[in-house]
Image (cartoon, rainbow, N blue to C red):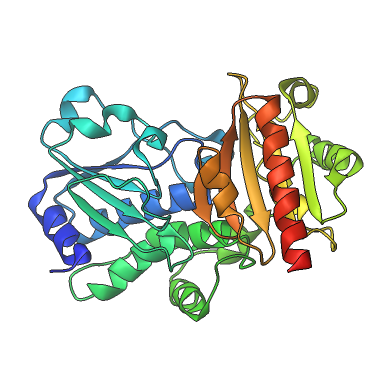
Length: 316
């Protein structure tokens, strides 16, 4: 019995289903979470389905999170999408459910859950949910709203098809675009920035550092971020800016958090950089990963490792 068949069986048995995703969500986290919720609600109207986690105001257009009490978890099936390890699960009450399911496309370095479906060959967890719908299309019904969620998740996690895209990804997108939703509006929502964000873009281009090896990076301290009024817009828009430099072979955004450590977003054109991420408390895809730098010294360590990696490839 495949993992997908086991998960469908658990969904059928459950009366209450609670769906989680990772902290600081990106479009794929929200898209897979909301898309799966819509798929279950439409297919099984008698079931109660919740989506939980901290509301991300900048992505409220993708849907609102539910607020539920602790007792709802007692007999619930809990599904976590797009989350490689347990510490990153948003809303740690996920362990209070009756049964736990993991659905993810990141490397399964830290397995968890009673049932797990992990496939690293796909672009996104949203594509996985679409595959799930396709596999059981004789039993499942996907709504237009659910298709819109999954489409947004795929577009977001592929960086508009710059990363991790193949014929299967494009086939999924083609299938989703046959549903009745405004995919052009979604594209525009994901491509626009606020005037304040535009000012940050100017700062990034003026202060980025490009090494001789082709590693492009920017360090954004709390002081720098506080000088700009981004509000709830977030900083994810900065990552693709760094990759627009034609001689950049890999790039990173070091964003200081309120607690003092740095969130690190790593990207590359064709040289795998997820090994660096794994050495620094993170992981992800070969060309798109995330890590944590506990202090300024670790920031410099990551910069040196990335620079050395590019030099080795250039000499090899």
